[in-house]
Length: 198
Image (cartoon, rainbow, N blue to C red; front, top):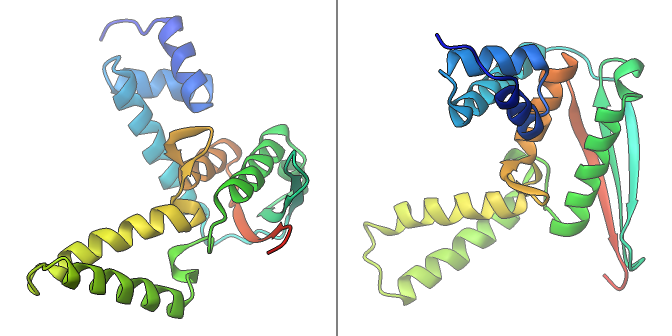
């Protein structure tokens, strides 16, 4: 196994915000392939997130974001396990980024399970009518519908949305990275978005 260069580790750290030793291990495991190393770090974040899932997240902060035009405002509550983590710069930056994301994208819910059933039904009906009007055969409609609903979730469910500052990552990816870094359960609990005239 060839020595992993400091430059490569630095590049990976800049792209993932993971710790030095985690980046070094991931690069060694990936044979120096930075893209593979990113996937390894993401999976590690998922594993840590799964481990922390049963823990209580009762600490945290409420972040406020007011858009520059003063016409959109967001309040978001993000919880973690300890006050120590809630006070870290990474946690606060994450909360700020989530609030900005909500201001920019106006999600319906945090998870797909929280999408109101009536909203989902309405979307399904609209898509089905469009497909029938376009003359699609009945037997392919369910498959196309599935794809359209996946796209709907990506656009309207906060955790599934591409991050506005880096569309290669979803909000879920950002959350997993933070969980991996802090070693704590972190939850986006709730949000409210206000828009003048709405």
